[in-house]
Image (cartoon, rainbow, N blue to C red; front, side):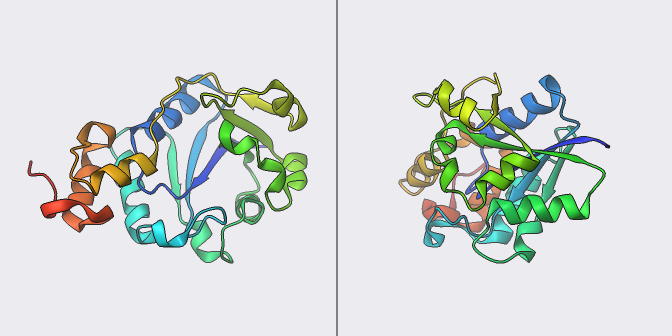
Length: 201
């Protein structure tokens, strides 16, 4: 078996500094050789009306990581798969395309609560290691044991894309919450209802 690769699939609407911290931690403090950001065109648990265009979200993830020098891969593979994007289809497609890699899946502890509702969740657990990023209020040892999941002891950063979207639209300057290039991209493209064409400089 070749390199250890961790899949982190999501809408990234938008990608923020919390995502960067998670990726940085995984590649520096675990056995992972690569961290794969898989951008989802449509998460089955989220309303598609809230999403910025897929190409915008993919562009922002690429911008966020292009200068970090970390072994991170940004993938658009879900854009070629049936919609909505089910994780079982993603991991199967990646495993088929890159059979030399050992694939693990990273989810937030808040998603672990409903993991049994995911399509073919049992098959995912049979074939892949489940890694869990901690979230405040979602620390249930029984759930970890039930899903044979491993907790990642990364710093807990309580930033959400929803918070960023909601407050950008109200005119708040959230420059520190976003990679510099991502903040600029949002302003230049008028995403998330940003007011007055964004904030200069």
